[in-house]
Amino acid sequence: MLRLRSSIFRVVFFIWGTLSCILWSPMLYLPGVPRSWHAAFQTSWSRSVRFWLRVIQNLRMDVRGAEHISGTPVIYAMKHQSMLDTFIMHSILEDPAFIMKAELLKVPLYGRVCEKVGNITIDRDMGMKSMKKMLTQSRVEVEDGRSVIIFPEGSRALPGEKHPYLSGIFGIYKYLKVPVVPIAVNTGLYWPKNDHMKSGTFVIEFLPPIAPGLKKDEFMTQLETAIEGACDILLKESRK
Image (cartoon, rainbow, N blue to C red; front, side, top):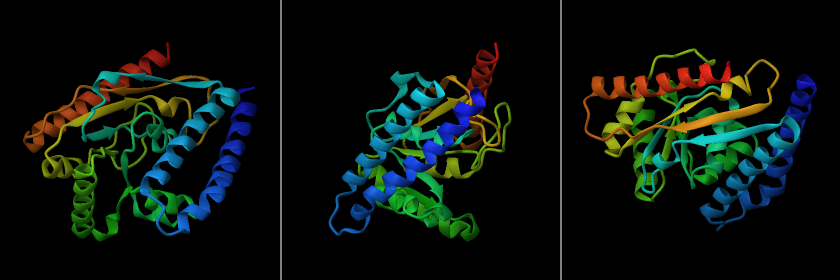
């Protein structure tokens, strides 16, 4: 039954995502459409996917540590385990800016939405030049009142798996001089990359913020310890 539900949801997810982008596509090319409209579209789409997750997959979301969601711009450093992580935050936070791989802008329509909504791109092949561009874009978004979301490992990890935390997270922390709010997840248990989806409740947990001004080693240790420790606890809870 779970495999059937998973297959049905993935088909609906693909069709619904494609149809939504097609219906919104005129707005992507008309001049003068406010960025806020594209952000509202992205938020609505994220909420609609949560609806399909509940109805088809019987999969719900539990947000913990909501008291750590900031009313002023911060950096959210999020563990990345699942495709869920790439869009679910739009239904939790108000108009965040994701730091994302530049090649995703090449995805038809979806890439155009990401561009119009004001996400921040990084091209690893361009090295420091891309890093400087990312920092500049991040400052623009923060000064405009938006928080920034980054995956500090740079790639998706399986539940219980840890990749090296990249120095880019410290670079943006040092440059922007705003707090970093770590985020732990167990999404990979429910929407894994190469397996059928599961029913239940996935968790997005906001952890206490890390104040600006720390040295690199202290900051990286605090960040990694907080995220990985919380993820390990979520993993144990889910497997009981």
